[in-house]
Length: 115
Image (cartoon, rainbow, N blue to C red; front, side):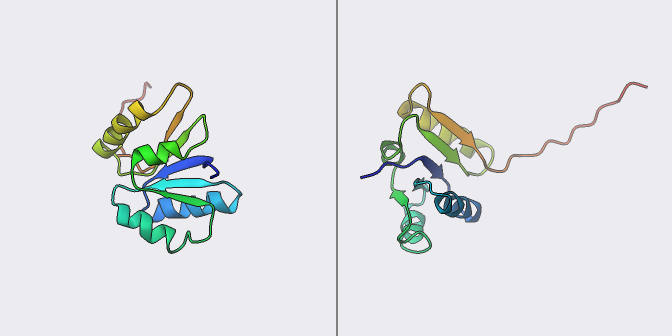
C-alpha cells in the first residue's frame, strides 16, 4: 500500500477542503479526526475514490506517512493545539514536521510609538 505524502488532522470544513485541494494536485493524504465518525463520513463521501487514507488513531496516521513525515494540523486554537502536539511528539522522529495551520487567538496590543 502506498504511503501518504502528508497527513492532516482536523476534518472540519477548512481541513476537508485543504485535503481535497492537496489530493487534486497529485498528493496522497492521510487524514485523522478525533471524532472518527467524521473520518468515515469523509472517506465514504467526498473522498471516495481519491488518494486519501482514513485513519482512526494518531498511531495509524503516522504509520501511513512517508518519511520524513509531515503532519498538518487544522485544530482549534489554544489548548487543543498544545494537546495535539503533546500527543504527536512521542510518535515522531528527528526531521519530521508539524504544521499548525488552524486559526489562532488574535492578540490586540497597543503600543506608544516614539515621536
